[in-house]
Length: 145
Ligand code: CA2
Image (cartoon, rainbow, N blue to C red; front, side, top):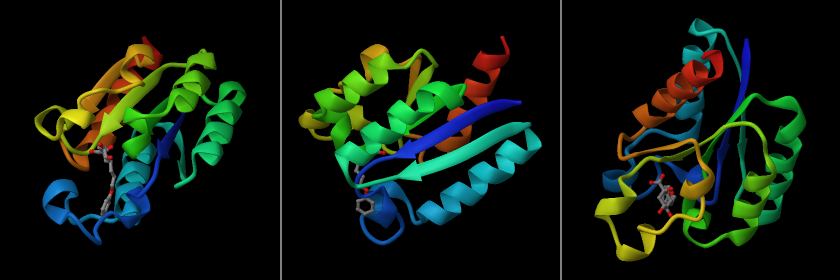
């Protein structure tokens, strides 16, 4: 049974409230419910963490190094700016999947750069809420290899 954590960064707590054309109408709760159902069917022990604060995200990433088998992260806007989150992820020995709801490559140029991609096993972006279960599937299969 693989232990996987999904970490969501700033503003993702507001999913479903604004910018529905970009991020869909599902809420963070809906997303967690969908992932929990997927995890149950696929023998995954799943946990979630969301914060708007960089330091809290870093603490959670650090805590994951001893008790998780894989980490999936949508770091939100910090994807494009945070050297500190990059450094925290780099310390981990477990596989990392970078995830985005939107396709960051067909949006503004400042979103084309990610400080996470280099250290991620892979990147999933542009598939909306489905990207979360796609990431779980990819991580679970990779861990079972
Ligand atoms: O597409 C993604 O998942 C992003 O990581 C979302 C981030 C954005 O800064 C990245 O470039 C791409 C922003 C999340 C903002 O979430 C909101 C949710 C509801 C209403 C407004 C913003």
